[in-house]
Length: 254
Image (spheres, rainbow, N blue to C red):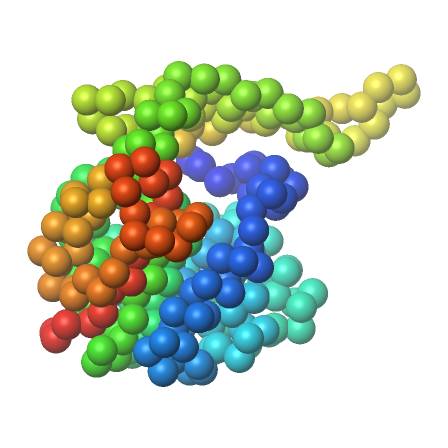
């Protein structure tokens, strides 16, 4: 089942509580720590471009990569609205992405890395990141932890919005650390004589949770140099109850 297809049209409405300004500001602060205040930056799993556009507005030359054509279509419209037409969007799989040359930094936010379910998939992605970074270039990404998915557990969320409604049915397998959610969307497509007309679609999403130790081993095993891990909320050192961890790694030789 293809994901982020119909979801793309209502993604921003359903994710309106995500603090994109705050997250982007943190990434920019980290990049500036390592002297990266301009130049080429690539975002993996850019989605509808919320972070990509903000990074471009801050002066970076952005490349956005995502596997969903529908998400990229929304991202391109958003860039046009913001007069950020210099963003290059590429429809590629992060496990096999290709760039024309190296970049100063690569970023990946909003748990995109959690969609990589096997160690081999992360290894491929991280090795490509290392390959396409400038010498001593910086990789910043976040991931949801095993602890977070355990807190969510088996649960159902339903909500009505102005133009859509959704049912989010979540299941978590503690033995595999795989979190699956079936997302049923009811999207308004028009109005009839006496009632609104909605289209029903279902998407199945599977993500994998990681511990800090697992991620550390995967990063270092791929050739990247791990610099630090931060709690994604407090920006302190992560602990066993951190739900989201922000990672900073560095290119470490080809």
